[in-house]
Every structure is written in C-alpha cells, then in structure tokens.
Length: 455
Image (cartoon, rainbow, N blue to C red; front, side):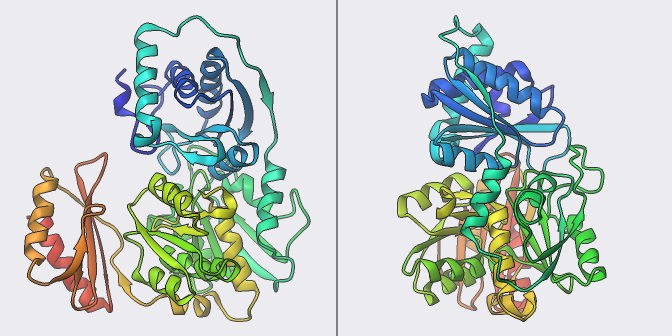
C-alpha cells in the first residue's frame, strides 16, 4: 500500500479497508510517536463502525514505541482538541468528517491542539509509517500504559464556562446532528444530559449515532443537506436551527424563516463579541470569507489578518499572533479560549447567547453582517489548472485594482467585486469564489471568470 494516496495536506483520509486498515493505523501510530516524540497521547473516534478498531490499532503502534495512551472513546473532533489542550497531550482523532460511510481517517495534533499538517510533520509520519509497513516494526521498547477516560462532562463544563447562557430569554432550537457526533455532544452541552438545564428547548433531528448516514450526508455545507432542518425550523416555530457535520467540529446556522446564515456573517457576529471582551485583538479570516469580516474587525477596534484556506494555516497564524478568534467560509471557527482550535459547539454557544440577549430575530441580528452578495464555492474540472489560472489573470488584468497570489489567484475589481480561484490539493479542480456589491455585479464577474476557467 502506498500511503501517499491517503496522507493528505491536513489529515489521513481513505476508504476502509482497501486504503486504510488496522495494520496501516498501527504503523501510523508508531510513526506518530516517533515524529512527535510524545510520551503520552490521547485518542478519540466518531460513530463510524470502523473507528474503534482503527483507534485501538493506532494505540497499539504508539504503545509499541513506548508511549502511553489515553483512550477517550466516542467523541467529536473538538472534544479531542479539548483533551489535547486540557491535558497537554498529542492527539489523534479517528474520523472522516462529512465523507461517506466507507471512509475513515485520522486528524492528528501535537500537545495543546497544535495542528499537524503536510508541512508540520504529517509527511514525515507518512514516510516513517510506510517504512514500518514495508519492513515491519522494530522490537518493542518498554510498552506504555493504557487509560480510559470520559471526556464528555469536562468538555461540556469547559464550553459552558466560556459563554454564559443562563440569563438569556427562552429559545426554541432545532438541531440537525446528521446522525453524527452532534447527537452525542449537543445533549451534554446544550441540553440537560450532563449539566444544569439552559433556557433552551432543543428539538432534535437525527441524533442517533449512525455512521451510514441514513437520512442525509453529514455535510451541511451542501445546501441539499440542510433542507430538512430548514423545514423543521419553520414548522416548529423555532428561533434558530443548528446543523453539525459528521465529527461536529463545524456548525451551520439557519434563521427562523428557514434561511441559511452565511458562515461569514457568523464570523462577523462572533468577532464583535470577542473583540468586546478583548479590545484591540487580532482576528484571523481566510481569503475567501466576505470582505464584511475585515470591515467588522476594524469597526470593532481589532486587527484583521488574512490567511490561506486550511485549518493548519489558520491555527498557526492564530498562535503566532495570539489572535482572539478566527473564521473560515466553511464554518470552521477558532478560539483563543479553546487552545486556538476550531469548535462548532463554542460557535453555536456564541450565536445562541447573541440571539438570546436581545429581543429581535436572528435575521435582524445578522442583517448588519450581510453587506455583499457571494457566489459560494463553484468547482470546475480542469486538466491544466496552472494554465487556466494564468488565463484568468490575463482576462482581468486591465480591470484589476489589486490582488495577490497568497492562495491561488485573488483579483480585486474597481466595481467593488473580487474573486479568488485556486486549485484543489487532491482533485483536478479549480475552485472559484466571487463576491460583489449586488447580485448583478457578482453574477457578471462569476460568469466571465467561469467562461475563462472552463475554456
């Protein structure tokens, strides 16, 4: 097996068992300890049937190289980050996030939830694991010990300590867990399964843990997967709807009318709250979030910093700048209070607090953050990515008023619109994002850029 096919830019991801199996997980566990130098690690897995076996095999590899293992069992990805930060341990989360049932994967971090990506150790882990698969593990060192822990209660207590919901008005909240890990974490954090009840009436959808995803894919970024939530919010007369992805590290929001709220608007809303607590702080946003975000950061006395797309870049920049908050177009939200890691649940708590602290609707609350019209991400299959990007650059050269090559090509135009086109790391795709001051301007730029991209 060639591990380069499953060791991606940010994690390990593949189909089980033909691309990822227990012997591979065992080799990766041993390599993880070798590369990180960790003496103790923590593991967790999502609801997929293959998770427990892969996690245990990974632990066996780590034990073989002399590390001890804290097994936390079922958990969301942000619960694993909590364990890594709270206990100062390197960690491995077994999940394929929103991918279909036949997939699984591993997200790895150093102590304090510091992300491990292609440029920060993941390539070396893959290479060392490959060597172990090819020639076998060396003789075992002094084996570490195994400890089982329950993280759910301390995780819920920690999140509740960061955002106080006790004084808000009563809210009706529909939550679509998509048969993913939100069905495990939401009752503990937002319900009364673990802690005292909050002024929330939770209306659950698809809370049964089922890695086959029988109702819809656990990928709320696809509009088709939040249709059930949108209908339920209206039918229930709810104040808000929340949708979590498979490993519950992302949270998407729907207002009382059933309209999706853009992650950029949520980023701006949380930005205002975090800067009120920490005036003058830095806020990170990736380069395809709305221009609204940087405007709101400045309006609230903060310093915006723009980064490449990808959680490893965001986390590294947050740590470097001690940023109070960071947001991505994909509904990943990062918090200084949460070890600079991403957590959909903490973002949900902030939105619920902001809504419950005033009498208006969520649409009223977020209206100030919907300043532009966005295309959303549009993928085009191309075989000559670099040449197509250069063709786009040439097509808009005479009108460009700014731009850069931070991540793909970003072009600013004099009519108040801008776009970014960047290549996929794993597929023959170009991804286009366009924003404009109105629908007509955005559509015109979008159509012209797509015409060039698609030849």
